[in-house]
Length: 211
Image 1 (spheres, rainbow, N blue to C red):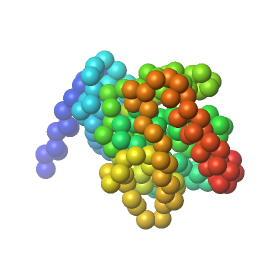
Image 2 (image 1 turned 90 degrees about the vertical axis):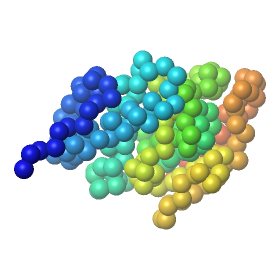
Image 3 (image 1 turned 180 degrees about the vertical axis):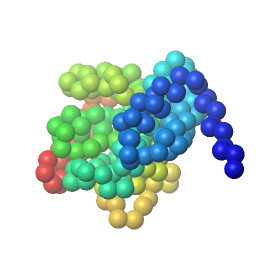
């Protein structure tokens, strides 16, 4: 029987990232699974990208997050850490702030993810500014699409204005935070949104085990 030809990469530069991930996840995921997730991650990000300069790097980052979530679903070590997923519409403001603040304050005791049901092309610059003022670095953040693996791996899903598009799965703890969308808001307003989210983070941390 003739073997099926490998899928054509949408960008030849993805090959090196696929090779790195195949080495890292050797013995856990097949090369085919890794390649499929990298290609899918690239294509999802490309749908919303204005500039494609960094898409190859971002696709590898997104695929890594998805592979880690998939490993967790399948019973990888480290299951004890609570996993929190923040979801909003564009993953450019509220969910990015919440994820960054929780990761900053949890000190490695929580696995944090964020995603958007309709991700924007970039994080709102004023959101990054407000977090920088609070000592939180958002320089590596980028809007990510919501994927099945990340939702299934989450213990807690926190929604922030995504309405009916937000995921609902059994056996998850769901919270909805009615936070104002910071899109196009002045920095003074965004600072208030940041502080409101941080107050919710304080309550969330108090409810989590081993934090």
